[in-house]
Length: 248
Image (tube, rainbow, N blue to C red; front, side):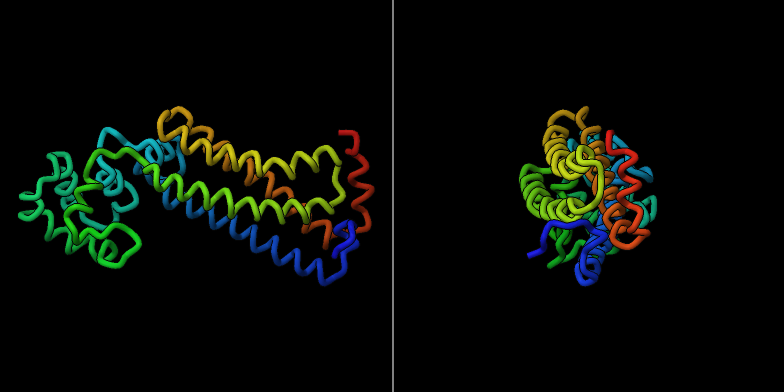
């Protein structure tokens, strides 16, 4: 068992262990940001994450189909403009089986099934019913997918915040702000997941998703960098530095 101590006084083995964990978690946070930009950041067909991206991801773009949103968004480079236009028009006209067999199926075979084929983790577009489903009006994330992603985030990410907070609890930091920083990621994680469900039904709540992700990312980053600095950088002067703001 590790006795309660400060980060600067930890044995070298624990410093290396904690540093490795914090660095991997830091890289993981950056990769999560890139993944969000790739999955949600193009939902409105424009680069960068916006409120509309979040609305389209959870509430849906109910003026059109999910197929149309994807073809005008992250799937745009995968097919020529005339092909995408023909598929979008087919969806807008009701996605009939007759038109699919006559015109759309050859396009799907040529441009889509290399990824959307049998055995893939994404919808199999070699089956008409799967393609027709995404050609219907886009109502955003399903209840099943929200439930699955919610419990994965709540169970998995909370353990990350537990260990980051545990390491940071040994930092020399103003007590009030230490408690705030340790608790902030958990509060914003709950807010983040709750906002998905609220946005599913009321799109104006999309801004809470932005706030939740920003809040726990900022608090985690402060704890990670502070912990790394106190373990390895100029450790003799940390008590003096934090005493200057101890009354905050």
